[in-house]
Image (cartoon, rainbow, N blue to C red; front, side):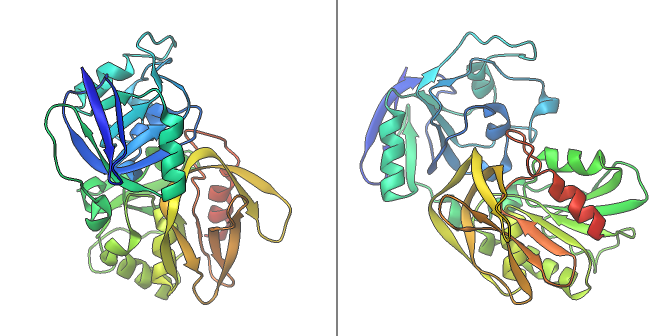
Length: 344
């Protein structure tokens, strides 16, 4: 069966459907990563988005066991690739990408010219789009809704053991953030995005991590208010991706939307005050454009000069726009967790 990707500027791309046979709408974005589609598709930061994968061969190594995913389900609203491989070969593969998409009711198209499609978005910026397979539907802007509330945990989870306890505010966390904290000997308490640590009862904790997540950070005012209380009480805090933007807003800074965002495993970030450049995994549409008082720039993107991290000049507050937990991608940034633990 064929389907059509329609962009809000009127561009149309017809392709072959290899996912679930239904129409879907969202924000169309692209990722230049060469590997890691199982992790990317299950990243909650992609909630509400139709993802274009620019690497030409997708599906060749199938889909691994659920324990390797970044959440319990596929999060994207749709998938677009150039060349889908339906005969995967990998020792960890459990089923094909197409079967997985059908099982999770996610549409997907194989479109020959994803290069042109990506060039349109790079030139005009991220735009709304829809995959039409059977019935037409209206465009949908996911940034006008609180996507974090949809992907955040609904209950408190306690995992790991250790003498130190970290609260993870789940705004749509990738599971590898939690894995990295647990393997460093920490007890991790995962709480919902709007769980107030100071009006609700929770056991004594030593630090807070604010996770990644989807959408506009200004939509989660409740989380921003909670982080503001954390800063007032001088509790050590690490923000990751959306958590970086939330920390910025809580501290009095500001954020803006990038033209087409950063989505790949090869984003170069320079440690400020040095000549060292780290290769990082990223997935975000919004970025920081005004650093709060008391903070300084920690990392800077070598491609476009945008901010990639802030750190407080006195207190143990810090955040990074990239994903230090990798998965998929390089492990260059994992030292961020160790650095944060030393500051606790």
